[in-house]
Amino acid sequence: MTAAVRLEPFRWWHIDEALPIEADLFGAEQWSPAMFWNELANGHHYRVATDADGTVLGYAGLAGAPPDEVWVQNIAVRRDVQRRGVGRALLEELLAEAARREARSTLLEVAVDNVAAQRLYAMYGFEPIGVRRGYYQPSNTDALVMQRDAEPTGDGPHHHG
Image 1 (cartoon, rainbow, N blue to C red):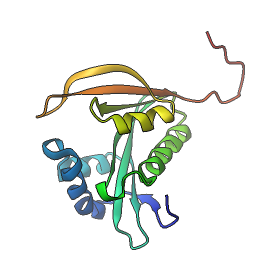
Image 2: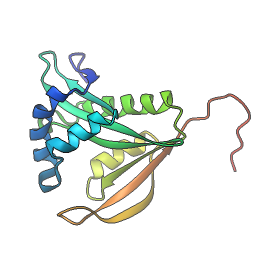
Image 3: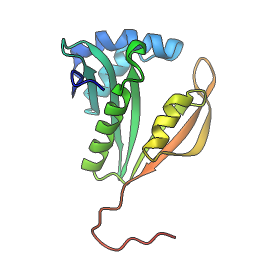
Image 4: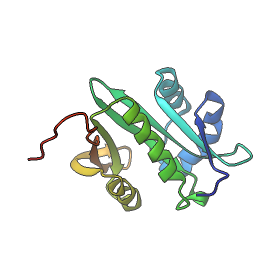
């Protein structure tokens, strides 16, 4: 990743730049402006990756699921800057937020045919735990559910069985 990429809070004014990325990556399954507004209104943890000029390169979001889980809502990177570390930086930011929240598990859904994303998640300790049939509509694509458990904190004995 180049040093010029910055992560900052996702604000309402980023929605207009996020929408074309959504449309390109997710087609008919793209989020609407209202869905983004709802995520922001609910106080979910969203970040944008921008270049030196402030242009949005990608975005990602995390939502809490009490008592001790968090869900990656989305990670999206503009096609022309993929495979340059932007998605990795966004994922690392979400995992850092999960740790700040002391989440025991971080979960996500990823399309079964998105092998590149699955590989990235596996590199960060996510493991497949199930499939949601026909999750993505209208394409009826299945979603692979992946989970990453928190690292032991070293605050006491941990037994692995």
